[in-house]
Figure 1 (tube, helix red, strand yellow):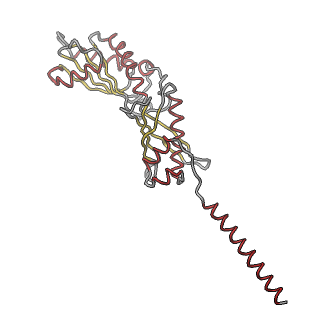
Figure 2 (cartoon, one colour):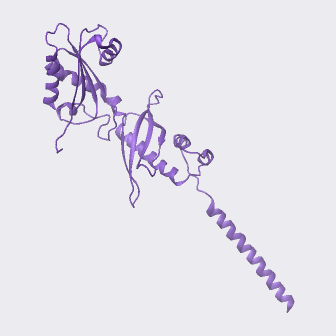
Figure 3 (cartoon, one colour):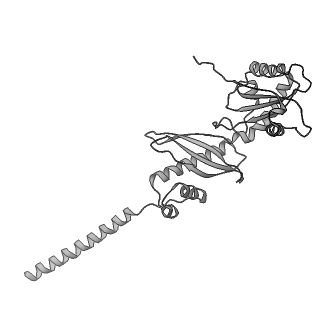
Length: 274
């Protein structure tokens, strides 16, 4: 009888040990962190943002890092829709936190490492998941020259002495203002984006150069071409000045001696404001 009890206790002990061993193995499997597959671009971005480099290299990511990858995927899809003829690489970022509800990314276009651009992703938290909305400043690189040419035509129709326009579109804007955006919408339809325009006028031999500035202001106000403007009436037009960049460099180098009048004004759409 005692022998039978000993055998039974031995069996129970062995069974208990096997059960505990199996539970331990199951727990170990559950505790193993999931490995996230990443592209080199994604990994480089997280390494830029993270303190624990090893965990990123291994692919064992925390929830906030996984959220950054979701925003990364949205950003790449957004850029591809907005600028289908170009390629982009996200190189830096600053993720959203308790102090702000948006993420900043910096990116380069078409493998050009000489210049980077910025985008912002606003994040709205919902029960069904985060909703993203992006804006960026790359569009200016594609549209500035087109806008300069079209605006110069309009200005010269009113002021023949207008010789050049230099445009600056550096603010961020949304998906509508992409590579196929028609810049004539700004000139003819009152489409408003934030931009600054420098206008250069030949004031040589003009008895009343201020009338030239008036002509420029009148046509801009008449057509409701919204933006910020600096008008330069110049004493002399160098032969090597052709484009807006040339004139901007000229007045920067020569200073006030080259300028008869410098007039600054703004026109914005205040419809609907009280």
